[in-house]
Image (cartoon, rainbow, N blue to C red; front, side, top):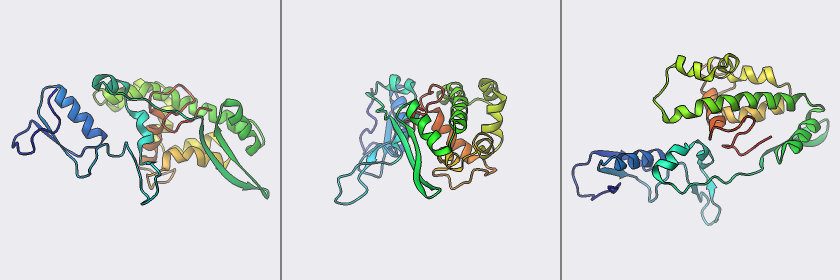
Length: 241
């Protein structure tokens, strides 16, 4: 395989990749495998971009993820094509959200098995409704994920091609045509549960649940499609109710 970096004094390359993040490295590797000469330029002293951990606090030996928890979006096809030694380490607990209600401290635990999550929902909300809605909502997103994820390594489909692939008009409406806040309010009654669901839609977007740009919908989709999960699971954030 031709080297990715080559001789810095060389004047001509078939391709120059600016930025040695995960996308740049994948592009460079594929070009090199195709027999092209490639130069990768990176301003930092290491490659990997957002898909690495870092030590942000001087003098503290604590490695924190930047955005590397999204590695579940790395398609297995790329792992196979490039011969990567790549494994995802799962976790049983996704999140715990504390809250005070009626003068008592409580919260919502997501993870640790279905029974434990169901019990946490019942303890917080006083019934089974919200957990059943949780299962229905993420069952829908899981089925959609299985149909959408393969398109990440295929030619970009048209809107109508993707709609036919999704083959679920309710899911299409909720996630592709109207702000996801509408669907969340339709499915869930408890404000804390709504907030936990919307975390995957709003984190890093500076949007709100009803933003007409639908950028929050795209953020939610990236969270739920990682690794084409089975219905009701979301490996990019590590939980399975």
